Length: 502
Image 1 (tube, rainbow, N blue to C red):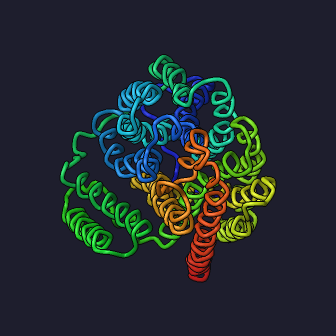
Image 2 (cartoon, rainbow, N blue to C red; image 1 turned 30 degrees about the vertical axis):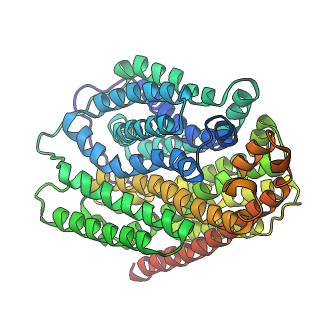
């Protein structure tokens, strides 16, 4: 039995058999790039930190602003594509992403890099929902569409796998900004091939994108992210409390507005399906945990284990190979034992990997971290592979587009919040353990390493800073493991309840 809705005949003439698959290859390019951009940036952090000297907060925003804007604008951009044209929006987004990537590559200040990353996030939000909705137009047959969505999702894993390797090669021979230039030829190819191979589905002039809805959603997410950052860095004080209150007020206003709107930006009735809620929780927590810990792992390999960029990138290949393998195996396993069991089991496996990372010490072999991270990825693969398909299949066909946007938003928002929460928590632990012993009150390991090369006094603080950094990483790992166990329980109960009613 197919997980997808019934097939519908495409409008117009039927394309040649090869054209939809060629179109899928074109749509896979930006998916690969957007995931590659995440991992390649983490590997470059120590190098851009040494060059631009950002504060710990600026470093987190350099990483986080991209995912935050992408997540908060996905739903709005999906509606823009329905009204204005999905292929047109995809090509405009590709052009903007290429230009912003070039600006990021040559940024001279932390502020300029943050601005370029923000533009990349906006452009990415235009690209992502367009790719998935165009796949639905290319493949009206449900079975082919399922295969195409699986390939589309797998490209995210391929991008993660290529990111550390390509980033390591670039950082070994060029400056840190070169990693951003990897996206430029990809976007040029998309701009050249897209008009020839991709359809332009009919638009719907009835779709409305109210600026107030977009601003309310963005404001709620920004306030929540700020509250997490401030609470982790300075404790649960007045600024963090103010951020929580603002997030609740703006989020409530958004929900009220969507319930009363004749053409809502987000169809809230989708949350009425229990499996949709559980799958979104799985995506949010699992991808968020990986996004939050990735920065620690890449910095550990370079700044604690002492690996050069290329060996550090190659060390992550086993983990990403496991991610791809489990992503490919997950659909067939779900068909045999049930998607809910696969999701819950995968989340538990990831939790075990984080427990292994939590047992790391400053003297641990880097292979211990590589092995623990591979176990984390073994669990994340099935969640990524099944997540989008399950959310889309759980919604009525007429609302499949909104469900797909929700799954993408859950993944991207998870990365953003994971970096904010786990990254800020690790930074807070580092500052508490090393702040009094590190000259100048340096609050990031990359900053200590940069100073060590300029000052004999600062070099003596590296050992203290490394131990404090590992303390921050292990604390974040324990928190991630606990969240994954909770998510596994929620997912198991949700899918069990559906089976009991069947």
